[in-house]
Figure (cartoon, rainbow, N blue to C red):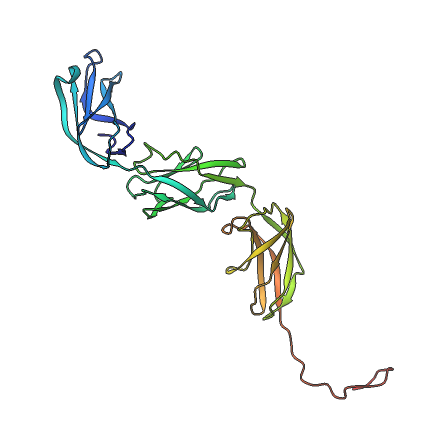
Length: 279
């Protein structure tokens, strides 16, 4: 069989490899376990069976007969029925048109065998589609040329059958940072706030500012060109500040400097004449 797995709902097109029937020899009967399926003969004499609906998952044997079931052409071929996977949620649910975003598809009934993700019209397989658990799949999203919403679906039989749940993913222009105001702050000091200026900021729950590699904080949306963020406490140095609309992806940022606070022990004398000149 060209396809050895299919959903219990049936409808999978299965080519019987090696079975050749004359196009004028009459109808072909395909039997999956105890259920009869529809068989057709292609122009070159190949047999294609459509799997019938069954009650539960499991392995069955497939046989093909000609002459309305009178003459058996092939038998003993194994086909595995599985309960259809379900896509319940995609996270993150948005990302840049450049692609490269790893999304987690949550649902049920996932397996590693024949695993593929379909994002709009694009299909990705291993290693860009990987099984995390039977209820979660990781997919690396491809780049697209236009912004907009697409559905994310999953197949566990090599792309022959995909889910049809319509969970959306939005491709958008990624956030871009042009300035951080102020661009300097104090090291080791809590309670500092900056305004980040740029373009394509979105009012999402995941909207965040990233200070360096590991300093991510939630952002306060002000407009599509301005957000406000608390400055994480850290030591002296320079970091890049970027903005993420989905909590995962972030574009090239603008620099922010953590400066030293310095220290003053004592000033003597503590006063002097207004004309100056005191040492």
